[in-house]
Structure formats: C-alpha cells, structure tokens
Length: 429
Picture (cartoon, rainbow, N blue to C red):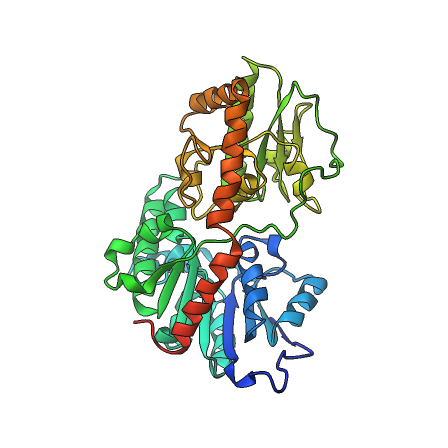
C-alpha cells in the first residue's frame, strides 16, 4: 500500500487579519481536483477550491488510483493548508469473492456493487486517522467511498456533493441485463439512504436531484448548485489557427463535438454524430466534422477522415471551438450538467442537442439552442440552420447571454459559502 502525505509549505494564515474567522474545511475527492480541465471532478471543483482557499483553511484528501503530476500537486499545495493522497491498492479478487460481493450488495443497506471497492479496508483505515482531526465543515465529493464516510464520520457533519446522480447515470446506460437492473435498484436505494443521513446533499442539476428526490423525506436538505462555465482559458474571436489545419472555405460549414473522448457517453455520441454527418452530406456535401477532446478512445480515432478531424489532447480547446459553426451533441447516455454544451454556448456557437444533453441546463429550444431527438431531426435541423444564417446567429447570441446570466461562477460560488456557513453552524436541518 502506498500513501502520500503532503503538507503545504505555508498555511495561508496571516496574523492580524481575522484569522479567527477562517473556517477549517475538509474536502475529500475520488480524483485529483486540479487543474480545472483534468477530469469531471476538477472542472467543477478547481474554481471552487480557488474561491474557498481565499477565506478558509482548506484541507484536501484525495483517494485515487492514478499518479498525480508533481506540478499539479505543487499548485494545489499553494492553495491549501494541506494535501494528502491515499493511493489505492490494486486488488484482484477471486471469482468467489466477486460473487459474494455481488450477492451481499443486494441486501438492504449494503454498498452497491457498482460502488464497491475491494481495498475498502485500507481506505477506511486511512480515513479513520483523518477523522480524528477537528474541522468546521466536511465536504465529501461524489458517491464514491460514501460507505467509508458514513462509518468514520458523524453523518450529520457531512455535506455530500454528489454532483451527478449515480443512479441516473447507471439507468441511462445501454445495458439491459438482470444484473444491470439489480445494480440500478441498489444505487437508487443507496443514494436515498445516504441523502437521508448526511447534513446536506448537493446535485449539479434538478434532473439529477429529481432522480430520487420524491423518496427522501426531508427534501430541504437537498440542494441544486450547478457548475459555472469555466472560461479562464477562453480565447476570444480571432484565436490563432489550430495546428490540425486551418478553417475550410466559407462554403463549408463545420460541425463540432467537445468533451473527454475517453468517456463512454462521449464515444457513443461521437460515433452517432459521424453517422449524422454522412446523412447530411448526402444532401449537402459542404460539411465537415471536428471532434475536440483529450484522450480519444480507439473508436473515436477510427472516425478520423479527410473531412473528420480528431484533435486529441490539446493545450487549449478554444482555437478549435472557434473553427466550429454548429456544435452537435446527440447524447444517448450520461447524467448531470453537460459542461461541454455550456462552453459551446458561451463561445457563441449554435448548439444542436437532444433533451438529455439539455436536461441539466434548461435552455429553450429555438431560443438558446435547438433540441432534436432522432437522427433525422438532427439532419433537418442542421440543414435548416444553414439556410437561415440570421436565425442561427441570433440563437448563438442568445446562447452566450443565457450562460452569462445563469452559469457565471460569480453567482454560483456564494452559494457554496452559504452552504458551508450553515453546515459549520449546524443550521441545516
């Protein structure tokens, strides 16, 4: 077992300026939360960390399997009072062990199979030591390891930032097997139980909160706090050309997809979009596709062609975003707020998506974006927008203003402050 404990060289406590008013906040993560575009956790929590560290003594614990890049660790150290990393053990269970775990997961109150960790004992041992410390507020991020959280901490001291609903994400997967159905039931029961025991639960969108909200007795303890759109690395119009090639002539329009291209829902959506592109080209050949996102899976790389660019990992997404006319998000699975949709809207691009992609955002079809369902509807929408360029420009302008009005971090971060204030004072009930 490998454990790494790192203390920041300087705890940001300066004499003579309200030191006594600073809260001690413990944050527990399943992935390294920095920098912002590293993963789905960091895109939400990097801006929150930077904000909280200005007025609080922030202590970070990360329970993860992956190596952490030294520069990222040093940057997070510079923000926080302490950073500790528990490196998960690699455990290969026997077939008998796996079968027993699955059977046990079906019992009432048992950890769902989808969240079970075979190295749970070492995680719990590590967290028991952390639990001896005194903190004003404890924030547990995601449903991962919540069985450990409920064991080693007083649940009424925990604010759970579930982000997405694990149950909703699981239920949208394409699998249709008995074990998948049983796992879904277990996840639903687990989320309901955890939310009923912790001080407060936070979800990223109303859709995620509603996945089981009706079954939680005290709904006042469930909060919806969205992500703000991450624009610190935004490059305005006129960005330099990306290294994968210059923009095609004006007669050719570029469709785009944006996201972590190793993430299964994005892989599936990109494959579907490739088919939509071919259907569009049967009626109008002047279209191409750019798939923007890091770590493209082999299935995504296989889509690359003369008229399909797969960028792979890039230093910044914005020069590529600038090359796109319409972003198309034909999602079949996934949950939560689609940050990629917000980023495209903020960049003043037309977004064409299905109701699932818009579910955590709340845009109005025809005003802020265009909502489609079937592949045929996507094709018709793309061709209709090309024939009505002024309508397309107006939707794009509306989209940007919608994001500024509803998803600016300046309006969202104070909600985390208020939540932690209430948790520290024991006022959430």
